Length: 467
Image (cartoon, rainbow, N blue to C red):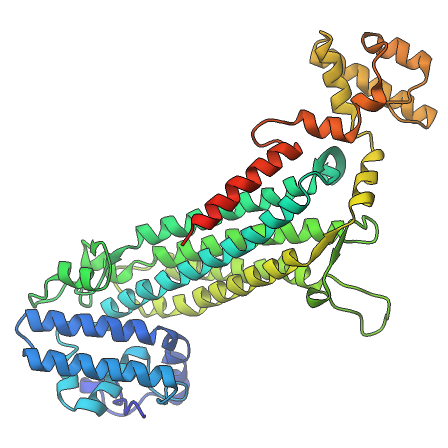
């Protein structure tokens, strides 16, 4: 089915056609066509509104609604020329298809409506589904990370600050750190959905519509909590596009951080993580190579999404009221940010579902770097020593151990007696064992295996309760 699109929706006062170069620049159908079902949905609601206003007879409303539904079915089945149409935008395509189907009655539908309030409504309707898909993608990745945390709840490995070995943690605890980050990403998206829950339709081009269409009823029909309250703002507002691009950027930042941590842990220098064949690649020259390309792409794609956010901020900066054609630039950047984030969430989940920790090697990695120094200071504090004094003493003990080429637990007797007299008789091998160090962190948010398992249970309940 061809849309039989008119030359334009605005050509009455013009003579001649657009220059082909400008026509190509002006056309937005190649990217806004993804909103066609939302345009059809909004058009059906507008037909009902025109019926309430007495502009359309009940049978005319029914005929338009039926035609719009039929067009939607044809689009779903690939029975239109949507992919190749020369229509200016999705709104022109729908109107052309409607007129081709029901004749002059199709031309009545745009009464009192502008493409300005139409596109603002279409975008909000479309972003509802986008947000649901992103939140769902986040939940899938969270579930994969929670499963990893469950599997490796007591698997010790070095924790880092400044990329220097700091204290023992569990791999499960690290996985849950990213679950927490992702929970904030999901909350941002859900909060955004609430803020954009107002309907622009009926705002006209900028001043509102002259017909008694009943904007509350339009909003209700389209599932909004209510209508927008100012027509100037309604047609020019793109805060939801900016917020969504920012939410995608935050999500990608978190995926990039996870990727960086895991690329390092999977390097031959660390040798702690191994990634599945389905998310790894080789070298065209070096047969032995196994590259974490999936993670590197996650790390790199954040630049693309952040670039989309920057583009949107630049486009909307300083725009005068009300609608300006600049706003046509919102969709390509926003849709690319959404598409990139969506696929990256899927890839991150695949990586998490097929990663293996070398538990023995990870545990052994805690032996180097004096990761038990803080706990040694804590033991001195338990004996009544002020922490600052304990900190100084343990710092000297680390120096003595380095000079002796040994560990804090095996500190030579002279140094131990001089620096740690309060711990005489304490079995430092046991007191400073990785298991003891982890078990002491039995506080909310701590890395103790018992706490990790408790958080895993909580997260499984939360994720299981999500629709």
